[in-house]
Length: 79
Image (cartoon, rainbow, N blue to C red; front, top):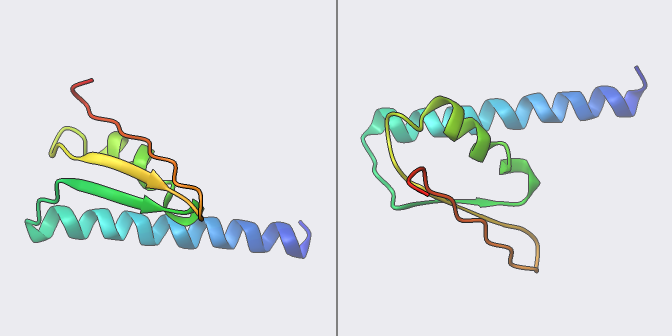
């Protein structure tokens, strides 16, 4: 692997770990937000991770935005 490939793998693992920890915190702390707002690519993994791991336990809306262009992706398990 090149240095760039190794760095990309490291960053993906790092952000994935942080995102999973943030979801665990929300679940275990008893906080019940109405919306999970994800901003930029670093947090994009939260949406599929949330639905795969936590969807049966809680029901939130997920909103994704990036940069200066606002792009909203709203999804609900009831849709």
